[in-house]
Length: 336
Image (cartoon, rainbow, N blue to C red; front, side):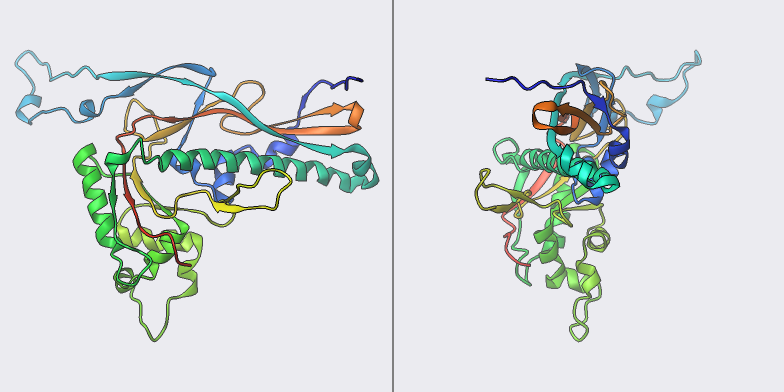
């Protein structure tokens, strides 16, 4: 059996340029993991990190305790931290570009390399989104933090009442308001069609529901105003589906995010020593990667007369504080 030789690898910053800032691009594509699992750049692929204890953010203290003492001293606290570990893994997707096809296309052959990069990147991002969705909807892990809501798929559903109670449960347990409310696309559309929400947004039956209110970005803005908390909607325009069929079989599409669940959670893109966070995405920018970006590289397989384009990222999706999540379930995933 003849062995195929593989040439050395070269990084292709020209192909990776559109993804140098990966998170904004992923959000434009409809993926929400950059918001709910904010990036935390690391200089090492494994190590320990410190996160502040929840009680340390709000110590018991009165104003009298803070009065300057006779010796000129003020009250001091020694912050308490918890230690945890992270370990990133290298994930990537390869695509082949036939060198003859690229040569026949002439100058347009360069486009084949960018298409290969886009395909590989899209597949990688979709897999990251699926992993994030699985963590959010883990009924076994967060069973005590989910409460049944009303049926948002009928006009009499009460999403405003449900979300108000959800936020208050979160506040009572965590001691602060959640940073974002994740709503899957079908639940968001259903919420807009309930009488309770339509009353708040000034719906008039004679006019009908304005079409623009059902568009993804404006839907987020509308529901943010309705619920009084930043709303993040998953599932639009292209980030909401996955193929569950094995290779070679007809595609079997399924939604990535559970359409019957809504989550309120802590979102902290800053320092873990200064605030609460449900989750972060630890990213190692070694081996040619930009901070938080995607590495695109190319090598040749002479036996195939093809170039291999690889899009990869070295990261770990890490739950930092599982207590910082409160959810609704049983919202009925049917509807538009």
